[in-house]
Length: 437
Image 1 (cartoon, one colour):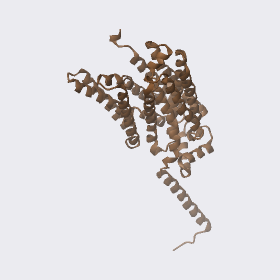
Image 2 (cartoon, one colour):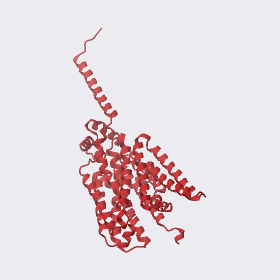
Image 3 (cartoon, one colour):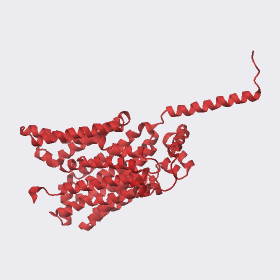
Image 4 (tube, one colour):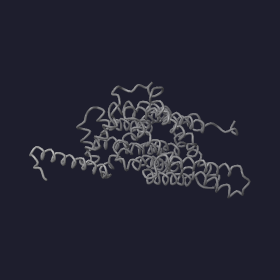
């Protein structure tokens, strides 16, 4: 009834059993999530660029009057507008080249290159005695602002474990909010202390220096190393980010993602009307809708609305900052649970409702207090719902949907669209009202 098994058959059976054990081990690694603590410091260092982005967006809001008095262009609306908007022109330049820089020298060195013009530009702005010097400093800072956000989105997506990628992506929005609030907080003494606006610029050199130094100790993107053919280094960085038990599975997933991608360089024309145009168009549209939603008008004119309601401008900025930060924290919690699409739908729907409240407040015959409550409440609701989805989702979603071959350069194109629309919205907001003609 039983046949004796030969030694050869026994060896084959043993090999099959060993292979099944290995397969089960890989499956267990796939099911078990890596520790988030390993990648957290690297993500935290990368979000410093987002903090600087927010800080430099708001650093001239409070001190602008003092700057104009000290540099001799007080009352010159054109000069004041140039001080605000020159950095946006620099940001367009930085974002246009960000993809080629990130692919050419790597993500870590791109962060360091982003910090350099921010340090130099802020130093020039802090020490200048002329309008030309201020504009030069703002232009240099803007190039760093344009380079930082797309590289930050790329890096966070590529070094984060998939189960916390949405949470880590929300850190970028939170850091931007903290940067804006930090700039407003630092600018509070500007009216009482002469020359305090120079301190506001000097302060920004500290986090920029920390960003440049911290990147010396952070992991390079394994995706970029793999594309460069540096397989052993990519495995070593995966071990730093995920742990040794997950390296093999991560490399297998990376090879699957890159399978079928051409090794040739990506040409700019291919992104605009080639086979990748559709996905680039979707990404550019998301950033365009983000800016055209009206968020810039809220940030620039919220003080006026609150002033009409009898609320001091400093307190108004605090309310807007709290609403922005609260929405970003909620987005961080819900991003990986609800998904990107759901948060976008909730966000834009909430923004539409809040705009409706402000329209009702502006056109109704309600009593004065009711109108003010609707107007202020609608504005805070708008900022809150923007921070839930429309703010953080585009920068996180696009690196996930772009093929690895075009990811960095496609992000550069989409962020350039972002800055063009941003610049347009700022220029429109600076145009005088009919009553001023």
